[in-house]
Image (cartoon, rainbow, N blue to C red; front, side, top):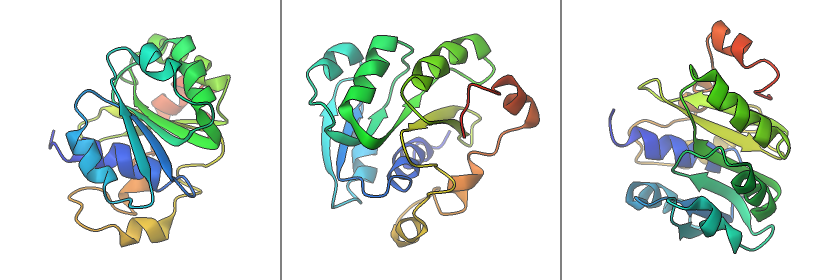
Length: 184
């Protein structure tokens, strides 16, 4: 996979979905590429924490302090998910890695845990077939995409205003497998 696709899709899908993302919490142990993309958002303050121990990284974070959380790691830990919800503002969203969509049992546990806190839970595809998962308390990633923001961003190699909603298109068998778990 081309190294620019993952950071562009993790950062810009979430940042162009949230109405006004001024505070971002990034959980990553290799944040350079993600930070390069986040630098395009001058109005956003970014805090970074490690992703090896998400519970420890999130435990002391201030309540309702982040508009967007980006997690460059897999987690299905319900305690970590509760901390994510606590840290996010009332209209916040989180994007994270998650198990491959063909691993229905692992995704079921994760999506059920997220369902306790988020109105919208939607996987989206990257070019190599891997997926990220966006969960939002308020904003829908295809209905609420900030097109002006997507159009004003420059210097991308992959992300654009057409790729953003297209990434959420899923084959019918995936839709059927995740009916009731994915919330859109």
